[in-house]
Length: 216
Image (cartoon, rainbow, N blue to C red; front, side, top):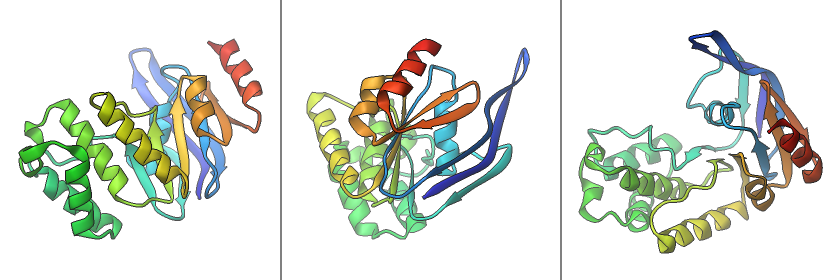
């Protein structure tokens, strides 16, 4: 479960402070998947990073129980001086996962060959994304955070990613942010709309779709 209590986040812009999250209060229970709609710039990625702990709110608290993933496909947390294998071992230790399993699963899944044992700073953006997605799938989480649906590599590899993600959804919750209604419909049980710094939660997809289209 993840609970937001009066979470606020703002960024300084040339026009002054821009509040993207304004005193949000929400609860995301275990084994319930949520789809969060929002226009570009609404703060979806910021919210996801705060849910996962990659970014801290300016005010308020985030309470978590269970194991929560980083945003799937997010490669910004890698240490560029370490190899892919060393980054995997580091992540496995943090999450208390089996080191050898995480390393071997990620190596086979990412399909980046000898680069797996080379510094991540030598990787292309696509190779980083493959490593990040493989590592995300190598560790069992109670809640998976997804920024859109990760599309990595060719059609065969994308199919492989989709199948791996589908198997995780059978036993864990998903919180996915998107600006596409079809994506939300495919992955979520409940729905939310992020607009004007506020988060509204709905059971009815038609209702949230109507409000989202009105805001577009």
